[in-house]
Length: 245
Image (cartoon, rainbow, N blue to C red; front, side):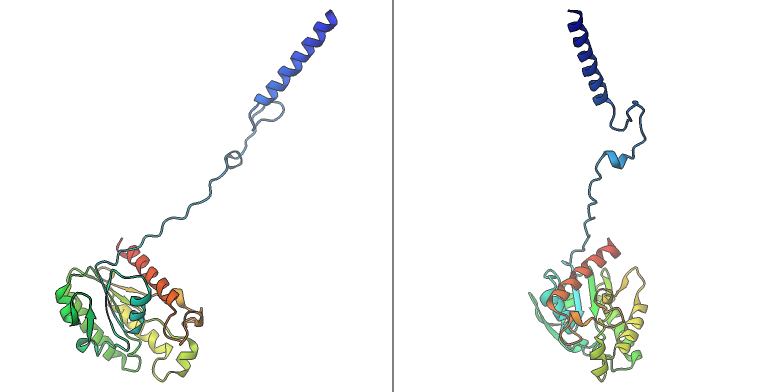
């Protein structure tokens, strides 16, 4: 009988020892001493979540421009905005240009500015003027900005850099040289006061890395593909949100 008691007692001791080992913290060694284990090794790190990208509404927005703005109107999902844009438009032709605006019919720009209230006005002109003297372009551009400020005193004005052209287009074109577009953009940037007038440059997303429009974005060297117009439109909404909140 004593042997039976001894065997039972030994079994009880073994079970107790196993229980103690199982109850030791996961960060303990076999002696029971707590080991410094990095917190990240104990608790799985949750995957980083991407911050949502803020975009601005285009409901109170007017775009003034040439064929590239026509492309934005057609493909960039900016349906809430108004577009006073014509293929081949120049800042010199703008005062006499007539555009059909939904709900108003055919109007001059001044009539449109008198008829509706805008919170944001984007101007994208200059590439078709590349053959003109720079001072003439900038003088006329200044008159346009003054007109917008007078007619829309509460609006923020966004002067958009003209998109560059591809190297091949620049080398073949008689007037629209990439260097001329760069000079125009540099001069236009001087209008910005970063309070009521902002200068934004989308060339950062379409450049080939060498200061030209990437051939992957265009079929003719100057106008974008539909998907790239959509990317431009999204970039505009993001940049606007960053600048004005």
